Picture (cartoon, rainbow over the protein chains, first blue to last red):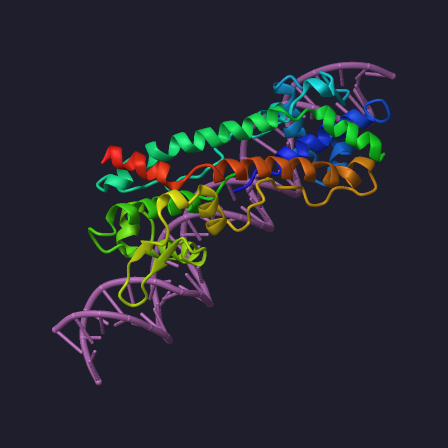
Length: 140
Length: 140
DNA sequence: CAAGATGTAACAAAAATTGTTACAACAAAA
DNA sequence: TTTTGTTGTAACAATTTTTGTTACATCTTG
C-alpha cells in the first residue's frame, strides 16, 4: 500500500539538478551517489522525467537540466511521470459472482476509490516543485 | 504505492455481514467463498475489525455481526483497522548525508507527504459504510 | 578514435503480499 | 461429555512486486 519510492527518488533527482546544474555534471552517477541507489535506477527516472517533458537529458555528453521552472512543475506531474500503475487501491481479483455482494462489490467500490484518487491527485497538483526548492534553499 | 487489498476485502466482508447476518451464518468460510480468498485471510480481517470495535465475532459457534450501524462506520475506521503500515509513500533509505540535498531531502519531503496523507485520511473519514450499503441495497 | 555518457534489456536479489496447512481453544448441541 | 463446527494464530510456502546489477549498444564531443 505504498507509493513506490521512485516518486521520492524523482523528487530528490529534480532537487539535485536544481541545486547542482551549474556546479557539477548532473550525470546519473553523481545523482545516484546523492540518492544512494544504483545509477540505472536514476537513468530510468531521468528517462521518465524526460518523456514527461520535465527535464532534458544530454545524450553522449551526459547531464540533465530542468525544462521548466520549478514553479511550473507540480508533484502530480512528477507522480504521473514516474508511477504508471497508479491504481492506489488493490482489489481482490476473484469475488464470487454468484453472491450478490461479490457480484456488485467492484461497481460499488470503484466509484468511491476513484473519488478518493481524484482528491489525492488534486492535492499533488497543488504542490509545486518550487515549494521544495525554496525549502532546500533555506537549508543549504 | 498501493493500498493492500486487505482494505477492499474488509469492506467486502462488512457488506457481506450487513447483507447476510440474518440469512446465513456469517462464518469465515462463507465470507471467504464470497470474497474468493482463503478463509484464514478472512479470519485475520475479522480479527482486525473486531479489535477495532467494528464487529463482534462469536467464538466457538462462529459468525460475525456489526457492532455499530453502517452510518457510524467510516472508511477510515476500516482502513486504520486493516492497514497498519499506512505510510502511503515509500522513501529511499540511504540518501547521502554528505550531499546538501541528500542531507535535507527527508525533512523537506516529510511535511509534504504528511499533509497529503492527512487529506487522504479526511477523504476516507467522510465516506460512511452506509453509503456503500445503500448502493448494495439498490443493486440486490 | 577514445572517453565518458545515456538507454535498455535481461537477469538477480530482496521485500512485501497473499495463500495454505495445521492445530489449539472454544461454545453449543446432541 | 462427546461431537461438531468454528475462531485464533503460528508457521511456512508461493507469488508478486520492487529494487538492484550487469552488460552492452548507442551517442556526443574532444
